[in-house]
Image (cartoon, rainbow, N blue to C red; front, side, top):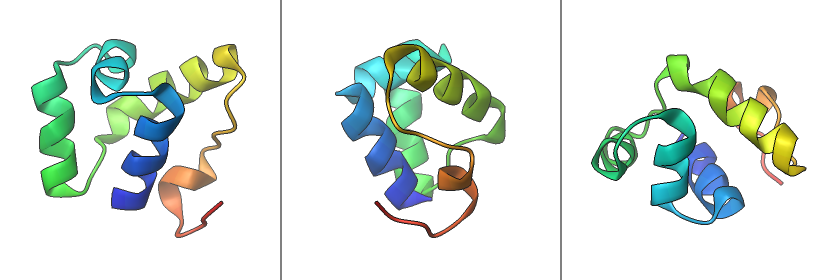
Length: 68
């Protein structure tokens, strides 16, 4: 999951933007990094925002060791 958070942060450009998309603070996103886990309740928001922006992000990215 740590790789997924790196991917998401790279796609959205910053921890701050990931926080904005998910409705949490940047401090919360940094806590995800420490825990190496994105809470499941935020995955749908990340996928929807990625789709709107034309980013290549899929549900499988959150649930597998798949790499790009």
